[in-house]
Length: 372
Image 1 (cartoon, rainbow, N blue to C red):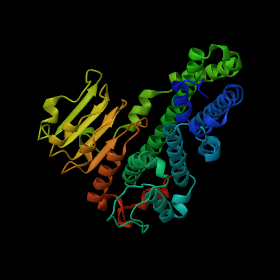
Image 2 (image 1 turned 135 degrees about the vertical axis):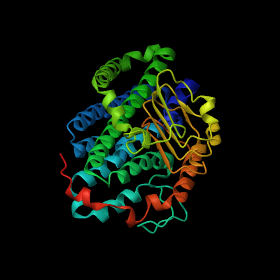
Image 3 (image 1 turned 90 degrees about the vertical axis):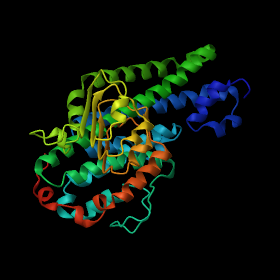
Image 4 (image 1 turned 180 degrees about the vertical axis):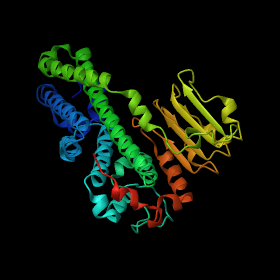
């Protein structure tokens, strides 16, 4: 196995094949395993194309089915496996709502949604008598963050029929974007493997010509679909609709509200981070990709919304602010770390009354809502 360089080994280890490397001869790796691995990747990408088509038709059960079962997602990186798991879980939550369970057995739906907000909140009193719940130990952080974002919106949708419609649009588009994330990650993983082989093992390229061409064709289809989707509508559905700044009649005090909107913003200005009067900070459709640790200086911040661009770094300090009660960071591409998970758990514990317990539910509008 000395003939395989470290770069290719790293690629194979990343998809969970490392333990098998020493068991195979050089030719076996190139003639049997890698072509089969690429065929599996292509089959999964075709399933993703089908899943996106199902999402467009709002056939959520079929979309979920195309994400397959765990056994069909071996030999893939942890990040892709985690993103696929969270998307599948959220589709299940959406089906529980849309398919009538919310009308017929609302407490069951609420229990399921609360159950799948797996924050580590040691002292929270839940409908379920569970102190902590991590459905997939390897994917804990991803589950915590993305379920939390969607769960907040679910709670906000209990007050009016208009809010329910906005929530259904929100979770549909959130999942739709997650499907494109999965496709992007899978295409990048396949391309990384192919480029490595073409660079270091050109004599082996004949083995991969057909599978490589198919991979390129599938990737092109994703690009075409991605380019035709209405990103503006998606961004609008991600907007937080209960911020006082986004209402009418300028209810908010002009000194307590700050909106950063537009491509001219590449970072949060220092004068904003140092402003102790701001209670609501809204960042929408900007080029900002970092919520820095300096946000801890905004000691009076109560509500924070971020959407419309991709985050590279989100400071856990935003969840630790002394007066923060609402954090709405919309970025389905974001992959959180353990530090954020722990900070988020403490945030949930401090705001337990807003997230747990039967008294937070308002059934009237949900039970009369007609799903389209």
